[in-house]
Length: 127
Image (cartoon, rainbow, N blue to C red; front, side, top):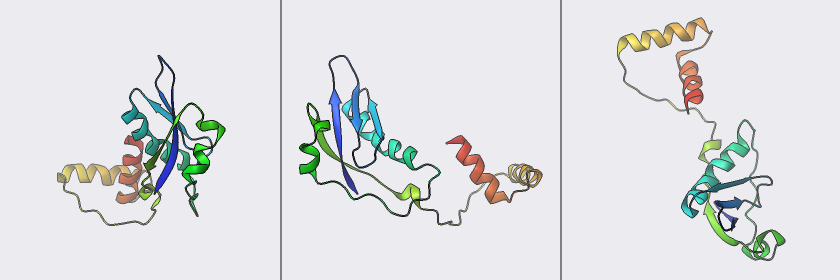
């Protein structure tokens, strides 16, 4: 879904980006491309650990362009991918050496977890 964002850049500073439809969400970057790419990460951080029942509708561009926040900045649309909110579990087939699988199983059992739960927690801690 495309959401309007407001970009500001002062001389000698990085690009700053605010996302009006997600109060408190802001990001930035050394370059305009980096700043716009960071919008996805900022929204993912905004929703981290939250149960999301519905997403905000994107504000009309005209309303954002007329806002005080947009004064002196530029307004562009950013495509936000909300797949990160999908909680549905899916099977995954991976290949690894037997000894690694055995070490995973031992570590999972010691923590009272299934192999799958252990791998999910390990991946979440790593990324």
